[in-house]
Length: 107
Length: 240
Image 1 (cartoon, rainbow over the protein chains, first blue to last red):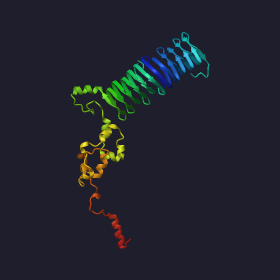
Image 2 (tube, each protein chain N blue to C red):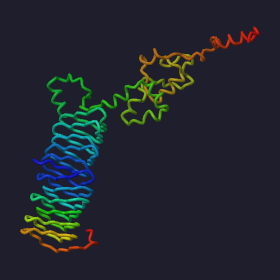
Image 3 (cartoon, helix red, strand yellow):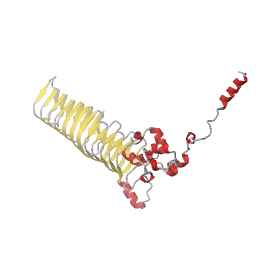
Image 4 (cartoon, rainbow over the protein chains, first blue to last red):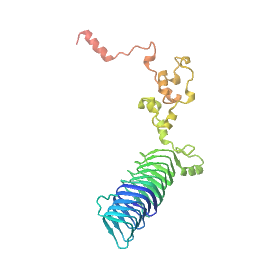
């Protein structure tokens, strides 16, 4: 089941659990998801982000971790990225360390 | 505007505000301030202070709820906490524990001139669930529940209603009370045991009471059962 936090929402706190989630609004806090996390073009996340699959189209200020991480062309990430497989589209902006193919790296 | 969804299996702990509609199927722990329709779907949990424009509950809500327009509780809804809304609708089967204030009812009351016959008290509180409990006849309640301790179980509001009204009580010591005048038209035994749990309105209880036969001294002998007598007489005749 897929979830959305819409563009007009401002959320502060932590999100955990199992499922897919798309963030189109503003989120401050920690996200730990067993599923696909999408930070949409209008979305902005401040805090560490971890999910099975992470797709960033918007802005993340914090560490990003996942089995597969995709930074789309409009993505802006300030923080380290750790992923088993990482895709970075042309135009994405990343300011941080990249760690790839680390099987023990769950965080 | 796109509808936001907190899916089943996902827990959001924190604070949420903004506009647009939100459907909670997972768990939302924290305060919510939403200028839009807030839906707590079946299986969804919301715990915290809630403000919304409109709200539909099919799941669980715990916390004070303030709704500007309509609060709708559907049959699977469970709400614990005080509720304020312009209008409240509750489907049969929904559970609500808390003070309810309908701000729309104030407006109604003013225009109708205080002739509202809905179950409101003067403070605008809906008391229907408690009235339902209190409406069970005291005698039936005591047979249903068995003991006075269980009668008070439904809650503090019920306990207040179930206590005996002060003026109905005979305050004299037991020894000084008349021995054969039954209290409130009932046998003494029944009154003292029931007085612990429930008020017996004198007018309502009196016609229903039948004095037990055995309590009359020198009363009629126990009735003879016809069938037994016939069998015995046949045996005396020697026909069997």
